[in-house]
Length: 160
Length: 146
Image (cartoon, rainbow over all chains, first blue to last red; front, side):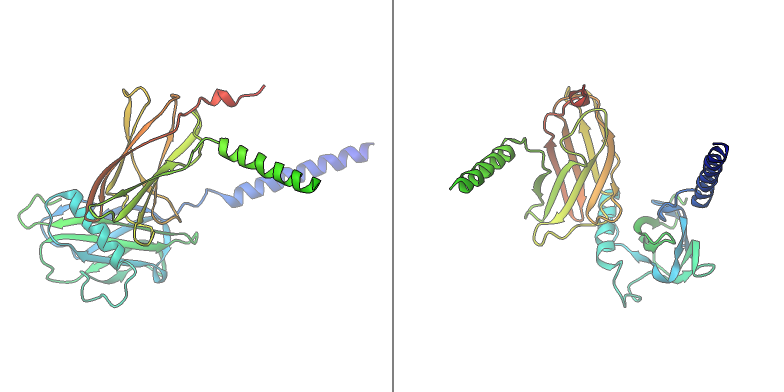
């Protein structure tokens, strides 16, 4: 009888240990890589064109399996119409190849092939106006997420 | 002959059961000056009951080929109007992960009755506004047993 009780107690301890190990190994639930912050921020109005756009994601992303682009937009005063034009452009060009000439970016810089922070380098002598930053990233949890935002360059403007 | 009668009876019962069910499907409206896009609105869980977490789904497709339209989360807007007409709230739409053309907003309805959903914004160069209505949302207590 005593040996049966000991066996049950041992099994219970083992079970508790297994649960503790599983909880410990699982850790926090991995979320998809979404944009955490950026410089410039979405809808920013800058006095001068920046050298690069910095994107910080909530999870590291596979740089070589991800797409980052910056495109110039036709000027439009209405912010909703501008975003609508940006969304249309994103649909058309995000996955396009051989579009380097049309783009405002000159490639990507990141620390390693997996990184949470990405710099999209911009070409020199870009004209003022609105730009759209777009991405389609593969995060290390194997999920693909995508998004875009708009910023505007207005020399002598508000600057933010 | 007996088998035939039983089969016909089964078909009749099935048709009756399906025919008697209330319609809880998503609703579709065509928008754009030339009917370029389909805007489909519904709830994640239908039929809808109060006091359970649910979500409004807004689905956008090209009318010509039914292809989903992506990247609209910044230009689509949704307002939910309660059955009493007094309470209304704009719900933030987000793109649903892994389902292109799906935009969603979480919500928990607390009042039984028919809700109005107003969807507006831009689908690229098309500006639109559309209104939808839910079926009669029932109180969750209706399901309690015993």
